[in-house]
Every structure is written in C-alpha cells, then in structure tokens.
Image 1: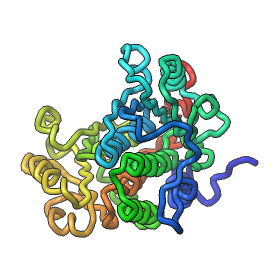
Image 2: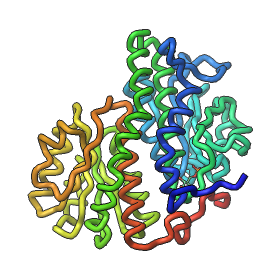
Image 3: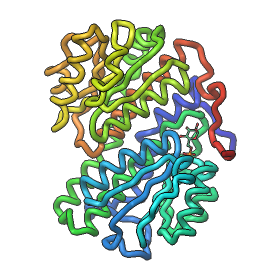
Length: 367
Ligand code: G6P
C-alpha cells in the first residue's frame, strides 16, 4: 500500500511523530517487560567471549553507533572501535580473532557499509547488523540480524530509524553487560524499566513541537550554527548539526563541549546560535561551564535540558527547551526529538524541500 502523509505536511514530520510508537514496537522485540529482562534473538555465539566490537556505518546510522560505543564501554566494559564505512574499507583495519563486527543501516544497502560487512566476513568476524529493511542485503548476510521496527522511512533525513537503532543498541549493550556478569538481575530490571519509559519520554519531548516551531525564526537567519554535547550526548550534537545542514542548508557543526575551546570558540559572536544539549547528570556542570564560555563571548545559546538543568543554567539563554528528566541511558533517544524538530521547523521556515533535500539520496548504493 502507498505510504501516505496523513495529516502531516511532510514525511519527515510524520516520521518524527511516529517515534514513540515505533520505538515501543522495536523495544517489544528486545525486552521481556514481565520478567524485566532483556531478550535478544537466538544467538549462536558466546557473547561473554567477545572482547572487542567494531562498529561500521554511515551518516545518521554512524552517530547511533557512536552513542552505542559509550554504552558498550560504560555498561559492558567492551572496547569499541567505530569507523565510517568509507574509511574502514580502505584503512586496513586490524581485526581481533573472534571479534564482533556490528553494522548499522536503515536501508541495509549503503554501498560502503555493505562492502565493509563483506570485508569483515572474509576476515572471520562475527557479523551483526542493526537494519530497518528486513529484505535488504545486510539483513540477509548478517549472522545476527537485529531488526529495527521503524517501518518504511521516506524522508531522506533519517529520524525514526535513528531512535529505533538507539533502542536496539541500548538493549544490546545491556545484554552484553548481563552476559559479562556486570549487571545483576536487579540492575538489569532497572535498565529495562528505564528503556520502557522511553516512548512516554519521547511523547513528552514531542509536546514541545509548537514552542520549537516558534523559535525556528531565531535560527533560520543564521549562517552558522554550533551544537555542543558531552558523553553519549556528543553524538547527538553531531546528529543535530547533520539534520540542520541536510534540510535547511545552514552550515552547522557538532562539537564535544570540552573541545570547543580548541577551535570553534573562535567563531562565536552574537550571530552564531549555539545549541547546547545538557541533560542534568554527572556531566552537566562541565557542559554548562563550556556554555558560559560561549555566553561570555556574546554567543546566543539555546539550552536543551530538563527542569533542574534549566533552573540552574537557563538564565541568560536566548531560548530553552525543557525535556523530561531521564536516565542517562535514554537521554540520547529523547534529546534526538528536539534537534530533529528544530531542524525541521527551520527548514520549513526557509521553504526548502524537507523530504527531498537537494543533492542527497535516501540510500547511497554507489560508492
Ligand atoms: C544517506 C541518508 C542518511 C543515512 C545515510 C546512511 O546519506 O540520506 O539519512 O543516515 O545514508 O544510510 P543507511 O541506510 O545505511 O542508514
């Protein structure tokens, strides 16, 4: 059946709003809520024996992989290498015996990612793939297929596939942690509960749609926009910048907050909006101090944080967007929503072709 936009103006907008439903749908196949356990598809290799993971992907899927690196290392203590597929293919990577190679792709057909997968297969790696299109090449060729259940994604800029990838990767990281003996049943139950809260938190984030549409005019005239985040929210800063440049054609850069003083701070003046992703938590103070360095130079900040964070640091910001208070594990899923909405509304304000941005393809099947 043809996929319709329904009451939405663009597919991208529809797909952003589908996230609570499709993330819940995806989580259902990776969690057993009744038992408060993570439940992965049948795996015929020994996870506890895997001591290195190589993640390979492109575009937005690569950023999901970057978030996963933080999770695998923090929760499961497994070192992770991550590469863009186009780099991985040609850099002659050294792969460990019996390592796990994990590919992330919405389409399952991206040429560089598929070539990297085949390369890893030849090198004797165990191949896992987080893929949205179940009939795709990557889905067929993986030893362990970890499907996302986002449904067809039509907008060229990926949104719901990304949050569903994060949902699968969070469950996978928790599963590794359990198998490595680093999470007992009680701790696993707590993680499962937090993951199950994600759809409601995504809904709460979507409630800010109108407010974000209203602030789009603050960003639309900008020539450059900077996004800052730390820890697992650093990849979200990269994703926010990617979304904005893809569909609004505004130059944007994502930076690790602490790295800003090593370069991008030179760009700051009152014409460069700076979007700061800072959920309250152990890294909050650090990010806020970077934000204050921006403000001291006249930079106009949009702070995305929760109530406590905004109360503490919201003063002096050009705008704030209040997210629900969430566990650090699900913050990257929830904080994806405001950066997607911001990019979307800025693009609408600029009158660009949101679903079919110039020069971009939904699936890049040539090198
Ligand atoms: C293209 C799309 C992006 C996507 C990237 C990777 O650039 O425009 O939205 O993130 O390819 O695609 P994949 O299907 O492998 O996730």
